[in-house]
Amino acid sequence: MADLLRPRPPESLLETVGEPLFVPAPEIIEWARASFIEEGAPLYNEEHAHLNFASIGALWTNVGNSRQGRTIVGQCELGQPRAMMGKWPKARAEMQLLGWFGEIPDFVLTFDAHYSEQCSDAEWAALCEHELLHAGQEKDKFGAPKFRQDGRPAFAIRPHDVQEFTSIVRRYGADAAHVREFVDAANAGPEIANVRIAQACGTCMLRAA
Ligand SMILES: [Zn+2]
Picture 1 (tube, rainbow, N blue to C red):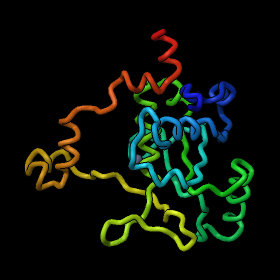
Picture 2: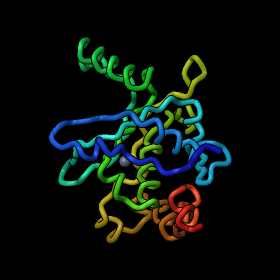
Picture 3: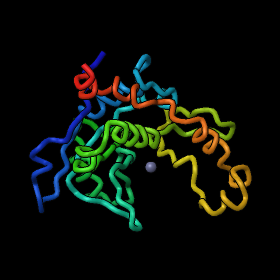
């Protein structure tokens, strides 16, 4: 099994102020594959099965991000820069990706270095897996996974399962709000207890020993 030590952002990145930095982080993907994606992984989730066929690039950044008053600490995007950017900006973005990853990855994940450094192991695992879940596969109208002509999965950004107002759930209930599955999952309690998170994290294992 791969080295499961939780990936940490480089110190030089954390110490740099006033200069925007993005640093490629293959160690994040190595950790994510060994923790969640590969068969037999300690926190294995079959919903990531298509990612065995995906190339994923990851970045640490010291650039803060927020939207509508919420802090953003992680993001998942399709790797291929879009044509609507214009020819030169698109080619420039491709050049940047090739420099970082040696290829245009199917997905690019970005993580806030300062948050990732100070969050708990469970928070890190939840953040990392959250971004991986955005790295989805298209489905046909029958709900079956779609593939491209070359036989590779048709990768796409997967939206959150639940987008609803608390008020609607409170006033009309989980079924009317179509969040029954979500509520049932919450009521069932976490499948990944802190104990299992600790098993995926070398730092915790050292502490326990
Ligand atoms: Zn999200």
